[in-house]
Length: 282
Image (cartoon, rainbow, N blue to C red; front, side, top):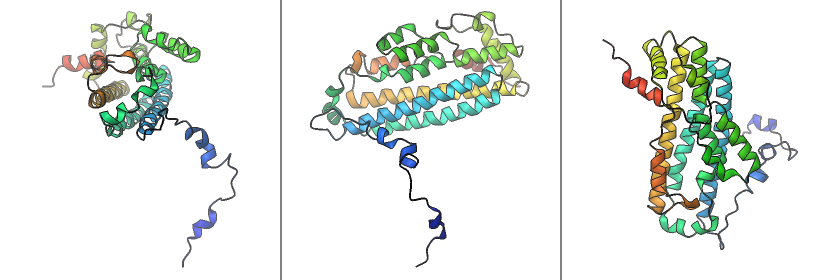
């Protein structure tokens, strides 16, 4: 029998600290799934893994958004757009995960729902970081993290720092577009109301995309991220509705009703308005 000569190149005598399992710390990763139901309910493992995997994707999203904002501060919009293209693909993974959780029936979920007490997804500090970095700022939202000193510190810092659209507006001001000073020199912890003057500045980009190509490309990348976040929110809502109907959510939320309110929020409203006000070509 012929033998693949490449087999001889395989390393087999490996230090466990240096092989695949060691590099990825699989001992830690695969021991983190600890269902609480007793006796263990088969479907709780799905529920735990679903949320742990989401947290890993949130971690990467935070990592990439930090890099994208740093690139914008350096006026490297090409790099920022490339990074946001990766964020978009991460969001596809987060969105697709709901299809797996959709296989959980109401009867199955009811068997173990009680074991995680008041734990709820809205308590995810990384999810809240993503919201803050995209501009959905609300100081009241960090109260739930008061007993988690490090997360509270990171969330407070993100709350008070410019969000990604703020950094984009600062860049536009640096290249000479008429961005109002009030939009870029302000209390970043406070929500910013949509501004007609910002829409006008964006209108110049969309009226002459060739002249402002990098800004135009980044604006569209921001819209991709915003839309994907809304798609994720909507599928989250429908998954919750499918599994618990209109019961109250864990953690004291109003469940589906509470999730519906989030769908009314747009991260970048001026990017939507510029589409409405942009003159059609003739």
